[in-house]
Image (cartoon, rainbow, N blue to C red):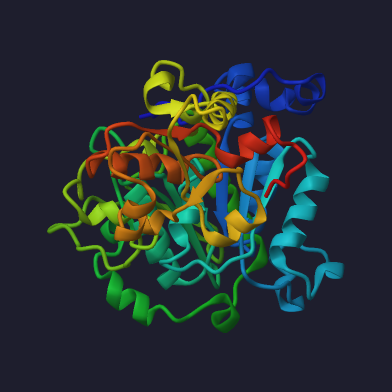
Amino acid sequence: MALAPLVSPGPELTRAELLRYARQMALPQIGLEGQRRLKNSRVVVLGAGGLGSPVLLYLAAAGVGTLGVVDRDTVDVSNLHRQVLHPDVAVGSRKTASAAAALRRLNPHVEVIEHDVEITPETVLDLVSEYDVVVDGTDTFDVQIIADAACALVGKPYVWGSVLRFDGQATVFWAQAPDGAARTLSDLYPDLERRGADADETCAIAGVLGPLCATVGGILASETLKLLGGYGEPLLGRLLVVDALDGTTTEVPFGTAEPATPRVANVGRPYDPFTDGPTAGSSPGPAARPHHERTTMQDDASTDSVSVSELDSLLQARARGEADFVLVDVREPHEHELVAIDGSVLVPLGGILSPEAREAVPADATVIVHCHHDGRSQRAAQALRQSGYDDVRFVRGGIDAWVAEIEPEKPRY
């Protein structure tokens, strides 16, 4: 059963893009509209190694508009037999930098965002919340537990795979999938805590066949494109097992764990404080909306969000004494230090409901919140409304759109 597309069509394609993607658009499931969806899509890949390499290469080649690359490691010569994204001259360099350079050479039409950070309970929500699909190419089960929990929390599809020796696996988890198709990592592996503690074999210890990474990575890239475009049958509730030694593939169906397994990854507190409050366990808020709703929000733009041009006008009116509101930046301090909107108050999302925040943002104030794009600001706005603030809006596109349209002399990141 094909699902609805995650992303709406983006801008018209240029002539260069029409030529580049002609053979792909010849597929009736994609066509011109589907290619514009890809152009408007945002996908983050966790890990730029054996699995991440083919995933990133094929998604970039396919024309996914924005690719996030998450890795905290450097390129090692022992990686090169399977991590085909990195050339020999990149040994010793940061993997995110090496990957970004390769992807930009492959397709200059794609924006690449480098996230040279470790995936932890404190960082994971910030990494996944502003993308449409999360693809996991890591080889550490403890990290996968964290990533799965974060994706379930914000309602993002989580495309998962693993490779070891001659064996590979691939599936799709999505806690908010419709029509009873919702699955999470704990449904496939109900005893997550024990498996996380015991799953200490990695490619470095047990070895891996290089081409197997390309096989499984290609499957993960295909699943991602299907979700973005809304065609085909996603691997929800189905584990595809690849045996490269025997040359066989096996499909293993799996259902939801009974009883439901408690989440074991303590993610969200630094970035999503209201998930433990009255709305915990309820349907996802604005942060779980697909990316196209962030860029085409016309029906409710006047009530729960503002554009950067509207914010510019409001700031000018406030300077003249004709408007009264608090502009809250819910990013982290290092982001605010890099670039900020003049007149904003820094209140990181993790402390948006703290007593200190109440002092900076009175409950009877008109509040406008912004972040890097608008994933965190939508969650902050929801949390403030639920805690009693009556007039709260978020800035569509965040400071990234502000710099692009209002203050282009400021840095983008």
